[in-house]
Image (cartoon, rainbow, N blue to C red; front, side):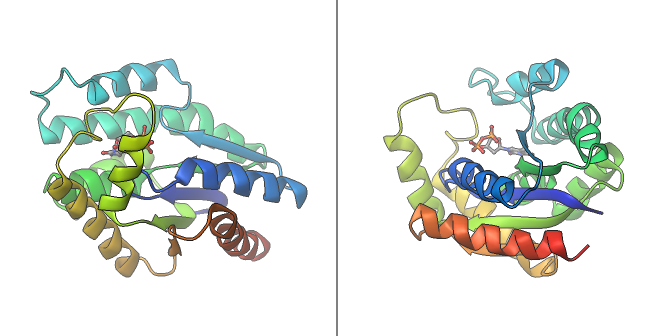
Length: 209
Ligand code: TYD
């Protein structure tokens, strides 16, 4: 566990990306050296793997293959981006990490949280975040938000509302299983308040070292 490794999770359209940008700004003002990253993190191998997963043409992709590919992409991102940044003393804010696989593949696809965790442990070894912020937005609200946005919807965005409801339930279960690590943040509040709530929790996490 590394106290500088922080992950952000949430359903589609939870506003994670804007929250992370805001948090980075605040933490930087507090003097932290902050890196924002998200899988595949600009790592060409991880990117090639993710293109397979998210391509809307790949309707035949099996759920176990999907879980293995996410874990493979994650490993490369850990090795090439996350671990080097932590070694340099940076605070790493990562947009989605292993909990996404637990919620989407473990619960959404029904592979089971324990099974998906086990295969991810092979990929990430002991690198778990010290704090995970779950930006809580009901799945229907999140999906409405992304449909109103310009731009491309990927293979997972296009899954049914039922699938996304399972993912959401998966996240809620994870927050109960790991209450020390995962904090729930109300993502329906105005963005500036969500950023303040997230920053407050992270400053506590970072100063507890
Ligand atoms: P991402 O590119 O992070 O999109 P966003 O955070 O903007 O929704 O993730 C793409 C999709 O892949 C998203 O629907 C969540 C899903 N996903 C998984 O199913 N498992 C995973 O392990 C990860 C990281 C993402």
